[in-house]
Image (cartoon, rainbow, N blue to C red; front, side):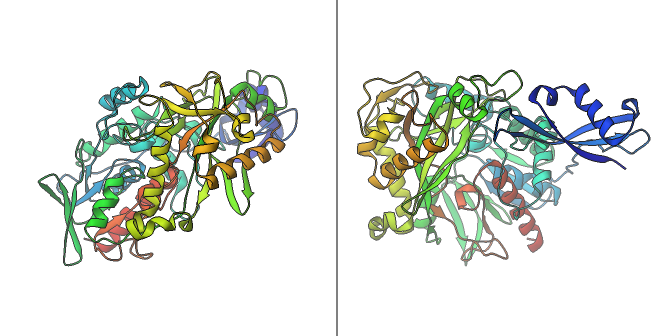
Amino acid sequence: MSKTITLTLSPKQAADVSYYTSEAARCVGVREDNIALVRVVKRSIDARRSPVKVNLSLELFIDNEPQPEPIHFDYGDVSHATQVVVVGSGPAGLFAALRLIELGYKPIILERGREVLPRKQDIAQINRNNAINPDSNYAFGAGGAGTFSDGKLFTRSKKRGDYNKALQTLVFHGASPEILYEAHPHIGTDRLPRIITNICEQIVRAGGEIHFESRVTGFEIKQGRIRGVRVGDTLVEGAAVVLATGHSAKDIYYTLHRDGVRLEAKAFAMGVRIEHPQRLIDSIQYHAPHRGDYLPAASYSLVNQVQGRGVYSFCMCPGGFIVPAMTSASESVVNGMSPSQRSSHWANSGLVTEIRVEDFAHLEAEYGPLAGLKYQQQLEQLARENGGEGQIAPAQRIGDFVRGKSSTSLPPTSYLPGLVCSRLDEWMPRLISDALREGIATFDRRMRGYMTNEGIVVGVESRTSTPVRIPRDKDTLQHPQVEGLYPTGEGAGYAGGIISAALDGERIADAIAQRKP
C-alpha cells in the first residue's frame, strides 16, 4: 500500500528530487533504496511570509507494492454510429466529442475557423497590426479561444464532472504530467496548439468528423425539435445538436433570436487588462528584491467590493503577454496569455467589475435579451474609437488612471500591435471606471506598489463571459423550447474557463446518451 506525506521545503529543496526523496524515506522510516517510486501528488507555494516555502505532497511506493498504471484512454470506432452535431471546437465542443465517442456516438464537429497551422498565421497577422480574419483569430478556430488563451486549468466548481479525468485527458493528448499535481495547473500557449491538434486527430481516428471553415448560419427546427444546422445551403443533420460556440459568436445569438429560440440576458463583467513589470509583482509577492532561481513568476488574485459592486482580477498571466482578442476591425478587445515557462518581463491580468442586468436595462426595449451584448459591443467600439490605427489599443499609466490624469508617455509593454495614450478614466462608462479606480487603490493597500506608473491599464477586457444565457432544462440539459438542442460551455453561459467548459461538454454528452436518441 502506498504512503502519502507532505513536506514543507525551501524552493531549492523542492526542486531537488534526490533531496525530497531522501527526506520522504526518513519521514516514513524506510531506507531510500527501498523506495520504488516517489510521485508528486500536489505542489503549492506558501508566500504569505518570508522566506517562501513549498508544500510538497508525495506518494511513496515501497518495493513489491503495486504501482499506478499509466494514463490511457481507449476510443472505439464510431464511424458508423448515430451522429451528433457539435457546433464549435473549443474545450466544451472537443470534450463533448471525446465523451460522445466513449459513449458510442459519432460527433460531427462544425468549426467556423481554421485548423491550427493556418490559424497561427492569421493570429500572426493580427499581432503585426494587419487585417483581422473574423472567422480565424484568438477567439475562433481549432480549439476555440482555449488554444491561444494561456492554458490555466482551474475551476471552482465541484459539481460539473470529473476534474481529474479532464486533466488526465489533456496529459494523454500531450500535456505535461505536472498539471496533475500543481495547485494552479497551467499548460502554456506554446504547448496548447499541439495538444489541440492531437485531440482533433484522435476524434478523426475514432471515426468522428471535423469540418473547419464551416460557419453555422441557421438552425433546422420543426415541430419543436432540432433536425440539424445549416452551413450556408448545406443541411448537416444529427440525432442531437450540441451548441458549444464560445462567448464571442455574437452572430449565433442573433440567429437564435431571429428564429424565435428563447434567450436570457445575464450579468457579466468588463474592465481592462492591467500590466506590471514581472519583477515588481515578484518583489511584492515573494517579499524580496528578486525571486531567485527556484520560484516561478509570481501571480496574484484580488477581489474587493466597491459600493456593493464586485471588482476582481481575472485570468492572471505571470510572465505573459497581452494579446489582441477582437473578432472585428470595429472593436478593441484585449486578453492575456502566458507561455509554459512564463518567461516574459511582464505580468498582466484582467481587472474587471460586474455588469448587472439593470445596467443595460435602457437597451432592452430595442434589443430584448441581447441588450447586454449590445452594451458590451458599445464599450468595445468606444475602445476602438479611442485607440490608434488597426489593433493599436488605448492605454493609460495605472497611477494616472486612478488619479484622473493624462499619460503623456507609456512604459514598454508586451502588447505587440502597440499602444496609444488615452484617457480611459474619461471615456469608459463611469460605473466601470470609478469601480476599477477605487478597486486599484484598495488593492495597492494589500500589495504595496500595485498602483504604479510603471504599469498600465489597456482597453478593454470585455469578454470574461457572455452577456447572454441560452437556457436549458436542469434535468435533461436540453433547451426547454427545442428538443435535441444542448447548449454548453462559456457561450451558453454555463462555464468560465477551459476545465469548466470541458466538464460541461462531457456532462452534455452524458445527457444525450441518457436519452438514447
